[in-house]
Structures are given as C-alpha cells and as structure tokens.
Image 1 (spheres, one colour):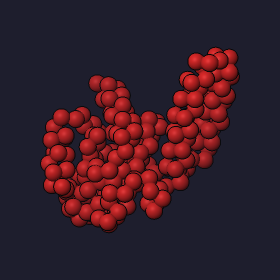
Image 2 (cartoon, helix red, strand yellow):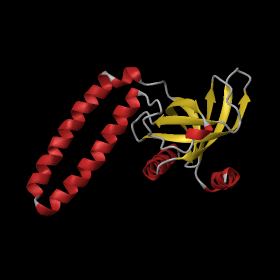
Image 3 (spheres, helix red, strand yellow):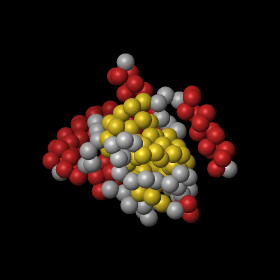
Length: 190
C-alpha cells in the first residue's frame, strides 16, 4: 500500500500546483507504528503557538457557522454577535502580536503542494522514515499538522539537507486550507 501511495504522490506532483513559500515549520521524527495516527493526536508534541492558533481557527469557524445560522432567524442578534466576534479578533490579534510572535520559529523557504513538501533541515533524515510536521503560514492563512514520509534527503554544499516528503496523513479540512492558501499565494506571485 505504501508503494501505491508513493506512486500516487508522484502523479499528484505533476498535476497539483507546487509553490515556493516561506512557512513556519516544525517536525519530529516518528515511528512507523504511529505514522497513521491523527496528526492532531495528543501523543504528538505540538508547539504551544500552533495549538493556540489552531484553536483560534476552529473557534472562528464554529462562530461563523453559528452566526450564519442565527442570521436566518434574527439578523439583529447575528449583527451583535458579529460585532462581538470582531472585537474578539482585535483582542486575540493584539495578544498574537505581543506574545505569540516571540514563540514562533523563523519562516523557512519550502516547496509545497497538497501532496507533499520539500524543505531544508539541519539533520539527515532517513529515506522512508516518518515525520510529524506542523506548518503555519506567517500571515495566518493556515495552521496545519500532517504526517509525512521522507522520499529523499540530500546534503547540500552549505551543510544543510534538502528533504522531500509526501503527506500520508493530512485531514481533509487541512488539505482544503492548504489548497486555498496555495492558490492565493500563487496568484500573489504572478
């Protein structure tokens, strides 16, 4: 099955958009036994900033859905809740600027698509090994966690390792967020 997924990943690379982008990236090497777990499983070490931003994203999605439902019944209440949400966004934005920015890793240049990622690392990663990875766009377009399998890892002249991996576990909503962000970034680069 892994070969089939890998072959499918190679075909996806030809069809899907790949872009170069600066993303905040964290990864940890994981065992094959946990490689098919949910990328948000509590056994994975998720950075605090990532958890905060992911929870805020989920809260926004849920609140937007509820406001939409309420607006069908009572537009005044929906407007009040919408204003409350704007105020909350300003408060969280201020907290983000003041606190979270200091916790964030420096954005790194990566090449990414919906099927995989290529990035530079300071350590060699074995081909066919697995990593748990968190990716955050610097402008908060998305915050996703995924599990990927290393396809290649080659040492560059500067001593870093160019690592290529394809996603084996990426939640559908995260794939959708990534796809939308890729299209937006692609249109901005044109």
